[in-house]
Image (cartoon, rainbow, N blue to C red; front, side):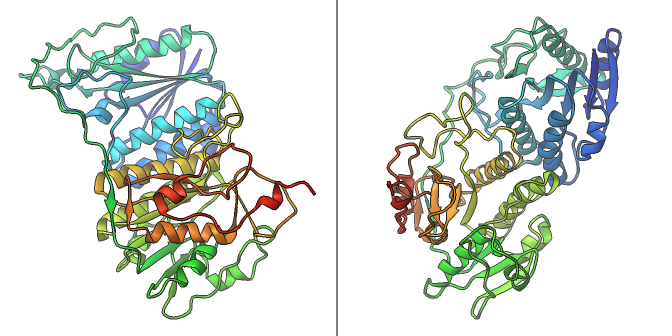
Length: 490
């Protein structure tokens, strides 16, 4: 069997290579996961063992965790994938709890934990729509033998030999299992400490830890509560040159006393000279005083930080749909840059936009279900547009809950002119003006029930497939343009 080792921690490389190399062909790959062609050059492999590479630049680490994972899982022929992750995703739980694989990760904006969460989310979604069997092995803090032997031993330490043993055994389990898709999380632990495992890989650590004494009764984690924030008065719209951004700019310009900054990577006049994205889609208009415009590449953190100076609300309407590299950079790193700017400037409100994440067909998604709510778990699959936007929204959620930033996530699908009669009739339609009004409502509502509510933005419709109650319940707004004519008999 051909095994591709990608960006493994240096401490465990010799042991993994030696133990698996005696029975399998080993290929090493380091630091090239962002190069799709370099990944494709090793396409003919049976198993990939991959860890997110540490990097001094957080954005690069996030990029390798998301785009790098997508590249690996979509360019190789491997139907078995072992992802090395970290138990640091669970550190936020009270040490008195016995935390196993069934517990939800609680990451924060630390680059290592954030990247690990995004890498796990990416592999999970990709496994839904491919024939890949994924195992995620969360390791404790791996120490070299000399460091581990120091006294006293830390409760979260894992001897390098045991880390190697867990990795090799998890790989062997993937090799032994039938060729079937799936996504499983396993914890590599020394013994009965705060982290436990439900699974049994058939490996027992040679350096087990002593049971930690029980402390006081553990406290449940704090859940995010309501967020109150003043209505936007100085918003910055990123992606104002697109039709959604143009509609949002038009609606916000009608708010008395509001001064908006419109940004895009190209001048708005240049973008306005192009043909509409679709029939009836709005084109941007030049900013007129008191509003202003400036050129901003949302993937450039310095440009985003400068554009956000003096703002009280950041609105993310940027999007790339089909180009792999650009989609991950704009949809993921752009969201990261915007949330970083919000924290840096003390901005309390961000509006995130994206595609509806509940549209995939059965058995993966909810296309045959009824009354699908906005808080239904997302099902992005491996589609670049949906996955990259989901990852960007996950970044928004983590920052919003960590810093108490009001960050509603507005999800759209088909946007049309209010009176349009041609084209496909989607169960998730909204008019372009109402899309802009929804963003205006999200930018001005005084209170949210939680930091990062997810909202379906669609017109009322008779089919009962998708719910959009949150528009009224959370934003205090409902669509104004009826699209009933799209459902009525001629």
